[in-house]
Amino acid sequence: MADNNTSEKLVCGIIMPIAAMGIEYPEGHWIDIRTILHRAIERAGFIPRIVSDSEDATIIHKSIIQNIYNDAIIVCDVSGKNANVMFELGMRLAFNKPVVIIKDDLTG
Image (cartoon, rainbow, N blue to C red; front, side, top):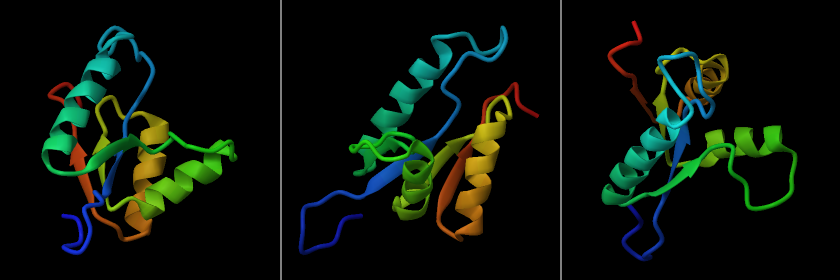
């Protein structure tokens, strides 16, 4: 999906829970999901990045909003209906930018 004149890859942001959530989503669950998403995104030709990751020491909220707005596409895991994930998804939708929404079988 990169421009034909350059070999730069586009960034695919990831919005997902990062902490354990009850017995359904133990500590290691989200690490496994993140690994799976990273592999799939790389195979699709993008650079995966959690939207809260930042290369500089800026204000975290500013980085998240900038990444949500600037990333070429976002993959959002709404499994467990995490409030922060839903808020970040809402921002991405408000920006009218492309997003792929995924969830597990436990989430109604």
